[in-house]
Amino acid sequence: MTDLLNRSAVIITPTKKYVQWVRSVDKEHAINASDKEIKAVTNVYLVEEVLTGVKKEIRDIMERNYLDIAIQEFSAWWLVEDDWPVLSSLEAFEQYFGWKLNEVVMNLCNETMDFDQIG
Image 1: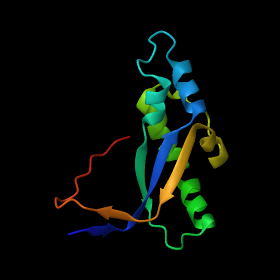
Image 2: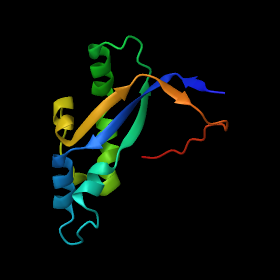
Image 3: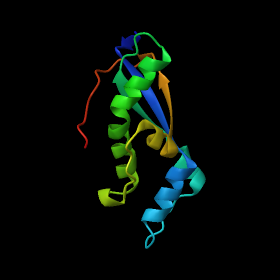
Image 4: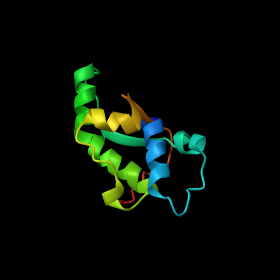
């Protein structure tokens, strides 16, 4: 049975500026991944369900969530928060990350969903 989750999903992709930041923070122990490998890492975040699908609603959802997403993305590569870029707006976030919001999320698994707390 397929279940419709009452959530939407944001797919995050690193930009060239994010890759440059990754390269800049670890000067002593060069990160052992190519630029292409870093850019290939995409993550999906569940957000509140999109109800209307209009651009303003989607933009508002991202305005509410971009900082939490950025924290997860920056900490995935570097734990020293003082070295993270300061993102004071969604536009600043978009310099480091591309994003696409998918309105519908379907669950094809038969098992119950398990959750692990992070951050």
